[in-house]
Image (cartoon, rainbow, N blue to C red; front, side):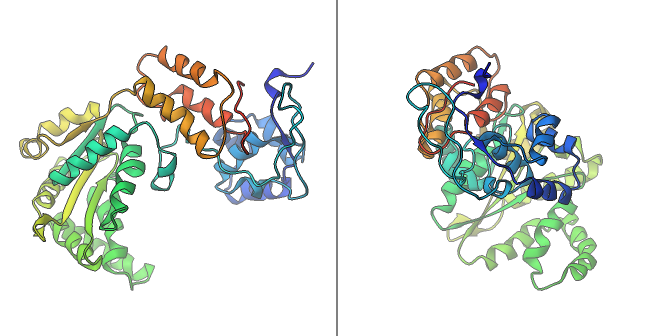
Length: 370
């Protein structure tokens, strides 16, 4: 009996030699690769034996290995036709030039994913407005709510479209000043080789500890011409989860406050600070009175999506690749999501694992229930 889950799927011939070489290059076992792909070990073993497999499986494999889907397939000839039923059963599959899955699943959206980022347009506009009027902006929400995605795939591309912004990213880590030094060194000393930079690293870290972040970012700003600078600190809660020294934490916050009061350029603040923080760590920040005063009126909160926003998240990435949903499938997914308490963002919950699996059908063919 045919497995119902295989209906509407298409097979490709994997290049087992390439897959094995890519896996070994990363130093992964078959078990590790299976874990990364959310596949069974048996599936990985069959692929490395050269057995035909589904397009969607190859796409998940390629994403985990950091390559294109065609890099994991043999380039000989078209794929097999569908073996499903209904009006699409006689349609032949496209050749093995498979576009990437439009759904990010549990992964955060990056700047390069902006064209696939939907459902948060109102928040993007609010964030853009807040940044235009405030020197420091806080983005807060529960874990998995899409804080980083909102900034990286929403705000930053919107700002860059004006051609007047440059962006720098940072995470605090265990030592926020070392993290800053790692970020700034290539900008400040672009002509130095790695050995010379390593020799200068301790000195740069000490300069940052002495409160010179604003000065150093000002140098970066001058090298960027007339562009303004958005300084984005992601995972701001690491300042409390990884940094163990209260003195270091306080000096870092003081440096950020100094940055927020930076000199104006052409009547406008030359630098803007934005950071993303988990909601359950905000109380720790509010224990610092100066920092609390600085973020008054500049906290953009991320809550659950409404049904219209979720519908956009489900349908639009597929439509972007010319793919349509099977009748009533999108509504079924929406109804399932509505029954889950606490669903705050499609990018961070159980249902987000289903959309990448649905995304295996490309080339204008319908997505169907699996």
